[in-house]
Image (cartoon, rainbow, N blue to C red; front, side):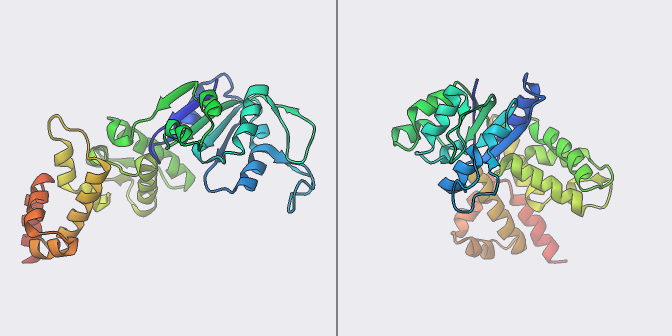
Length: 300
């Protein structure tokens, strides 16, 4: 049964797909991933279906096995399914319905058996209404749909994922085992992660490569994660984490005020806003005390 994963860019759709594969009856088979975005029509068709010798100019001698065949007995994960060209969609739909594939340039069908997990950050219903995605393929791949919320809305996930990535990346880079202290985990949990799981993994990898100590503390984290305003606002009663727009605005204001050493006039000028507007934003993001601290530091 196909599964469709929905969510913002970077929420970890492939991580979820791998988890589903590992827990499925086909876990002993391969997990084959292909991103449908960024490939032209011809290359995507070749990657999906494979080709025989001489199928087209530049075809690999002896032909090539496509991702669908490579996923035999396992899982095919198609990321950014909404990017698949409209004229390729009926060919892929036939594979799902008949369980047969034709390599490009071949007339002999090949039987295939695989589980499909597709993912997209697009609203496929809207794409169908706009004529950019086939309705029959949409209903075929969305038998089971899972909406993955952004990391900022998943309480506890940031800290758990950070520790998981830390172990994995220490092994990958052959670095001695490291761990986060409680302050670092708390700051990472409160940060809004506008880039979602992808941003978290990249941040952890940077810390693995740049922090020499075995313990990674709160002071080792990037400035935007240490900023008190983000944590204070996120911790307000009845309020969730910062939205992506708020997080972006907060980071810009924090950076401008820090660089101007707490000088509101200079910071407002750098941001291109009125000083009165800046004061409202400082109150919103609980940066008043930080401004006092930056001004005090600049006088010493």
